[in-house]
Amino acid sequence: MSTLFEKIIAREIPADIVYEDEFCLAFRDISPQAPVHVLLIPKKPIPRVGEATEADQALLGHLLLKVGVLAETLGLKDTDKGFRIVVNHGRDGGETVPHMHIHLLGGRPLTWPPG
Ligand code: 5GP
Image (cartoon, rainbow, N blue to C red):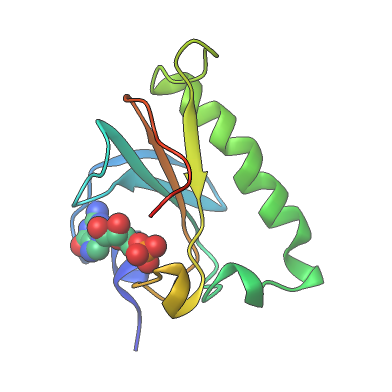
């Protein structure tokens, strides 16, 4: 059975898509935790980051490079603004959707440590 994010990739569930290419898709989180909250996902259904393999090396690099592109597009890249990326793995990490995703958060000061 396909996951929620696979359904978004397949356009079976609507989403506010902000970026797409051959390897990845980015869309706004349905429950934003900051003025800008985008999820960047690989189209390949890697369940969670810790289960990526050597075969995913280029894909993981691609995703991180696209973070910069997205941050620029969304107006967050200047260092007097900025952003945070978060990748949750498993229960204690706060993962709720078993398809790897990078949260890109910005548009307000973000505190540290996270909750
Ligand atoms: P996780 O908790 O697994 O790191 O992140 C999953 C994220 O997916 C959450 O921030 C949640 O708000 C978001 N989410 C859950 N369902 C949907 C949905 O149907 N559409 C969108 N755009 N985001 C969703």
